[in-house]
Each structure stands twice: as structure tokens, then as C-alpha cells.
Image 1: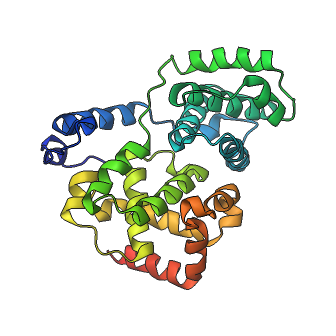
Image 2: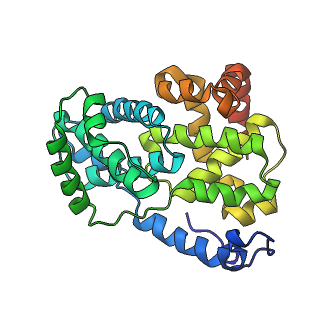
Length: 286
């Protein structure tokens, strides 16, 4: 998954908005590229989890998405939560009756890192069916922090998505659909081994394809760090997931079928299996 070093060492054209710190962006994103590899979970950790399965993970993430949406938390919080969860399970073997507790704690920690105000522990306990008391959640929170070595700054795909969007002058349609697609990758364990920058590029390129918005250009390669052939495997996995949303990402499908997200999930569903499979075949042909 190495990329051409020149892509990341070259400076962008300066932007007039000083908050974008354009003069430092190349160095910032080169550093993020280093961090994302350091913070990758073990994609094969489930082989060591005797009581768990990937299906349990799908169910847990579906529940986390619903809780996340109820509090109207940032998209960055959701991705950081799943990163914490997968990294924790890469290091600690737990029984199945502790899995929801792990997901609750991961969401709590991600909220504290990303949000101005995190959800109250008592409310999280209640949404979990009062199975785990607030005191137990606090205890487990300390345990997860120790397991992660207090290393909480994993870069998520959203910052990389913003950078790629420069290639299309921050096209709102492409970006909005890409956000849905990027979230969908959380629901399939095969994406665990993908760095955040690649997840962002997969979601963005797939969004362009689904919206029929032209080709992956040299500008896209420059801002993402990936050529289209490097993204083909991820895009194809994503297209297959989109064919059966109620089986692979039901909570996300419901969430993104909303005016705030331009009914992104319904748009994709409306394309139909034939178009999705046609796009799948074209990607394979590259």
C-alpha cells in the first residue's frame, strides 16, 4: 500500500484561507500517513477471540451506529470508536457478554477525544439495557485506555476525504455520497486492514462512479496518494455490500436515507443491482 513519495512531498497551491494551513499540508498528511499505519488493528484478531465472530461485530457496530446517531455525534467519532474497538480486540480476549461493554467504552472514549461534550455514562448504560452499571463502564474505560497504551490519536478517513475533495472543488454531491460509502466500510471486517487514507479514497472514487462524475484523474491521485487500480479491490467489496444494504448495513441505510444526507442510501439503492454489477465489472476490467 505504499504510494509515490512525490505525491506527499510536493506542496499544494496556497489557499487564501489561513485556517487550512496550506503551506504545511504536505507535511501534515505525510505524518498522518505514518500514524494511520501505526494505529491499524490486526485484521485477523477474530481468530484469537474464542467466544466471538465477525457476525457479532456486525451486530455491535449496527447498535453503535444507532447510539451514535441518537446523540448526533461527529462522523470522526464513529470511525475513531471502531478503531479503538478493533485495536482493543486485537490485544484483549473477551467473552461475548462483554462485547457490548467494549463497544460502549470505545464510543465513550472516542466522544471524549472528538466531541465538545461526550454522552453521559448513565445514559449509555441505559441505552445498553442497563446490563452494565455506570461504575462498571468507568472501570472498563480504564482497562481499554491501558490496553491501547493511552495512544488515542488515530487519524480517521474524514480528514483525508477533505483533502481528496480539493480535486473537484469540494463537490457537495460527491462528498455527501462518499461519507455514506466510507461509513459502510465500518460494517465489513475485510476493511480493517485498510489505512484510513485508502478508505477515504475508496469511498470517494466509488462515489464518483455511482454519480457518473468522470474519471479518476492525476489530481485525484495527487490529493489521495492512490491510483485507481490500487483502489479496485476495496471498491468492488463496497459495491457488493451496497447490493444488500438490509443485510450488511441496515442502521446506516436508514440513517443516510435522510434529507440531511441527500437520501444517499436510497439513491444507491435506486440504481438497482444491474447498474451496481455493471460498475463492478468495469472496475474489475481496469
